[in-house]
Length: 244
Image (cartoon, rainbow, N blue to C red; front, side):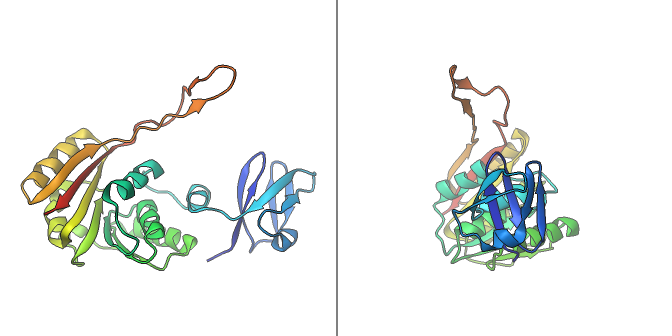
């Protein structure tokens, strides 16, 4: 994996240490000089603008460096999956479809002793997901260019996540792959899919069935404090179910 540094100042930049120079709107950064810096040091551009040198987080890399093709699952929804299932750090997780790989990367990063297998039928998407996983440097994530509707090869799975068209058609496959007490989570962009998914879940031996949405609203805090007018509040719905 390439080595990156986060430069934090008037703006945020992710800089690869494999290059020679890095241009910003505030001036040029000398990479040779950046390589000498320790985390927490400062560095100036040729115009004198100062930045703090930091280690980029997972979210920094996903926001600034990872490639995006289809719509991704946002961090607040990915966090809700971890929070509601309480999945352990050594969990076996199956994810579909990979898309750009953001959810599977997030799960693999926070379950470092476990393994995440992500299914993606689209060859182009699968390639991008693999590139993004390599960017983060994950060794516990496998991207399969395979249609999950043909069946899940893994057994005794702790968590199955579905973010795909016709997710309701894969509920039975997920049930068979899950161990007792394992979780199924389905992300749905529209409520009609939630209905189809829930109907299928209720036909099988699942419990703790619930559907939620995570609405995030930022506030501007100044002389006059109020919610921000613009922003992405609603993303989609998460349906949870636990195998009996």
